[in-house]
Structure formats: C-alpha cells, structure tokens
View (spheres, rainbow, N blue to C red):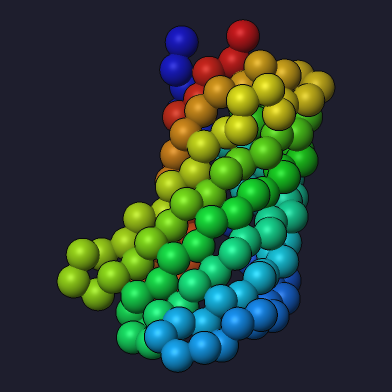
Length: 133
C-alpha cells in the first residue's frame, strides 16, 4: 500500500567547491546537511555534483543523500538519489528516489520516489510516495 510523507526541511550547512570553471558552465561538488520535520523527522548528509550554466537560471545536479531518523514513526536510515534541472523557460524539476535496499532498521525494504518543492520565500518542502513491507 502506497503512503505519502510530506513536510519541510532546513539547510543547516552548504559547502561548495568548484572543480572546473571553464567557459560555458561551472562544475562543482557540494556537501549539504539538512534537518527534516513532518512525516520525515531527522537529519541528512548530501553530496551533489552541480553544473551551473553561464545563464544563471540554467543548472543541473545529481547526488545522494543519507537520511537518518523516522519515517511515519518508524526508525532507521535510507539513501535518496537526487536528479534536478532548472531552466528559465521550462521550469525546474527536483526529483528523488529511494535507492533500493538502502533502508536500515524499521525502514528496511523501503521503496519510493518524490520531489523537493522550493517555496517563493526560499523555504523547502518535500513529498515522498513510499511503500514499506
């Protein structure tokens, strides 16, 4: 049975380092820590590879995030795979999927996918559609 988790998160830290600044786009690696509230309650550490095109509104990133805490009251951890793109004319997508078999503790067997929603005020919300055995 599919369930839905929703809530918000705060960015606790963001450390970014460019590794290629050639013409056309800047490539960078970022390490991010977050605190989640709502149906996901806990913390995470994320590593993403970023590409910022020479037009400020065009970018993309991909990465992995390890969440530790509770989901729907069940304790454990799992890994999310991020995939995002942004374009001024086409909008943005910020999708994530649970890496199969990455769940631990009471979250073992977790499957799911969702998205991150950026609010106009700069806040971040999430939605995760998931299944647990």
